[in-house]
Image 1 (spheres, helix red, strand yellow):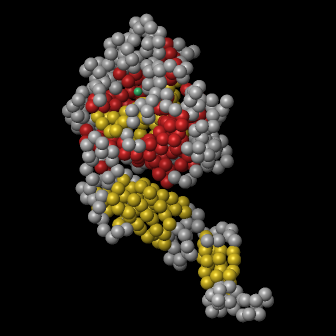
Image 2 (tube, protein in one colour; image 1 turned 90 degrees about the horizontal axis):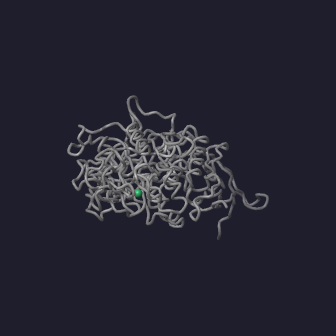
Image 3 (spheres, protein in one colour; image 1 turned 180 degrees about the vertical axis):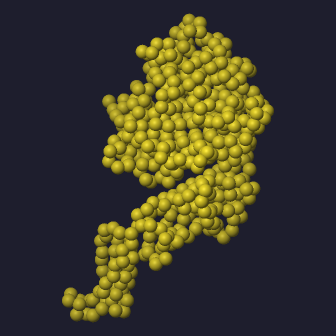
Length: 541
Ligand SMILES: [Zn+2]
């Protein structure tokens, strides 16, 4: 039985790659987890990811970053641990700079079915948007940023959970637990930072939150810690991040994806105290929580946990770190996953990918969304102006746990082809549609003269807004391609042989464009290249 569930949401994708830049029908054939056919198994996930890397070598890498516990103990068993790395490798940042990075680890807890598939779908959403040529945001994210997806962090445990058990931990049986159904280390209590510090994990080897025999004893956690330390610079201002702030300009976001709970959680988890970067973490948390109404809060608000991923990433590197609790149950139903979970959360992660350059700063700024270009909707004018319209909003936060401050929009600019963070970027002001920037949300517009644009070239129009406190928000973009314009003109005479003389006020229609003939029966059009149906209609009397 092959799965047909799960193909619609990402469009018609197919991993063929040979016929131009189109993902086609998306997934290779897959069976899925029994009873949950939308979720690729471990082997199917690996096969699909490897295929993407084969088909799109300039955009995708599938990197082996470590071994599972089973494989570490017996190289004929277990699994490799991989990261799906997405970025356009031909596009390099300015000298001395790195591309901003978003890192996701998924399926660290085995029974949380939806997490691995969600991360795979997020990656495919970006890739599909890129290769289809339809999505300017996915395109600039993959051109200028990097997205790293550790799709299955705990493959040994996940394989057990695929048999229908609520397996959570890895499968390490060397710690003295004599109940075969309860062996394993809780990988999300095994991280080195503040390991076993604060009664937020268990010392009992059979317990569901067993922390392991020593800090980072588990190969899966070692792989994670090493990879994250490799990908992100240490941006703490000193090595005690418990009390000392991080560089406010720190770059990078690391998110550990779990289920369930519909929440977005940030450090600290091991103590009730707020992290030095609490405000910045909270603002991005409230932002990500906006899209699917996910509750944003500090990890230890609900319960204290030590040796956890987010505390380790933030505590050792200063990187903005989160745990995302997806959905409503461990074995999330495919209907809910396809209809709700994806659309609740993909926009949140697209937003995170956009602000990965400065996650402690950018989310306080106004969000630009709904960027559109009106072009050739009626008769083309000589001056070839287009109108760019966007929504700018400084209120899109989830405010169920305290209210995020909003400011009036102060200004909004657009940039053509060179995004605002690059040398040579030219900011051109847009105006508020209602005449004044005097509100926390505005519709903005600009009229752009395209007379110097090249025909058949795709331009990217980036839009970015600033609020009254000087917070500069995330960029959104739209594509624009100028079409070749044909001039079509002629003269219409009335009567079968033209014996009636020039036809005045006749209506000539070509496709969606129409015009009137003048007193000498003449008409003239400028329309974009294409094939059209045309009609001529005499005036009615
Ligand atoms: Zn979990």
